[in-house]
Image: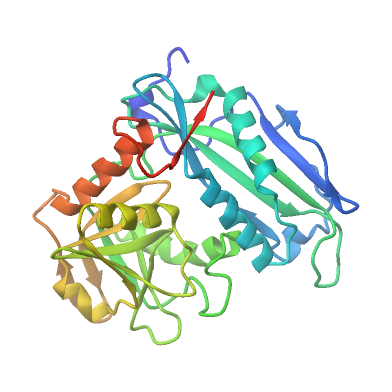
Length: 339
């Protein structure tokens, strides 16, 4: 698009040509509907408004040097949406429909896919809502599945640069047997107060601990946590953590690089032993961590040297982003072309 400053694009919503929608009524899904409306007509008693029947996904479309548009591991996003739907008693979206939706919405908004080389992407947001009117606590009978897109820059303004984060003990993101493993809006609502406090104190994000014992690391704000110790990639294993597709991919890349991968409970006490620490997710890919502050224990954990990302995190970041943009061959079968 003309007059777009792709290099300084914020991670924010921007109107595009259209979005796509499907409705589940009377036991079946409708055909695809393409609309330029940014609004939804909802009954005031919809279950998404009262009982939290709302789930979503996030993935990106990347333009390569060859000008072709690529999607990264969309099948995993589709499966995670299915898992989330089943976790909160919603009607799952069939994979074929999910695929049709994201391919259609990207093609219809192709001019909004940022050019290669600017660090910007087209963010894709699938959203599933319970829309039937219910006053009693029960699952919806009708659902709306929609997908919209918006061009975005890096999630953190600093891009791939180390940030400082703060350990949070005052609030929990999710209960051990709750909805933490599902991508429901309520989990993010539960994190907003602590994220606000972290941002106001000058930190990039919050590091949440397990809700039961406050001994183990769960998630780094809206992202998964990982650490590097020697030749080992370490990431927490917990039922209250959202399974990150980026983290899953980084684990595979680490193995491919000859590293050992450990997915296990990670105690706060181990922070002093790590060489590198990072947060990972679709929005930021990898956010290296320079320093972790534990105000309650009066401790500071330092990683790396100054404002430089660690060598392993840097290598993983370059490898993953090179596959996503087509700069490196995709030997894992992760890429789908939008033609």
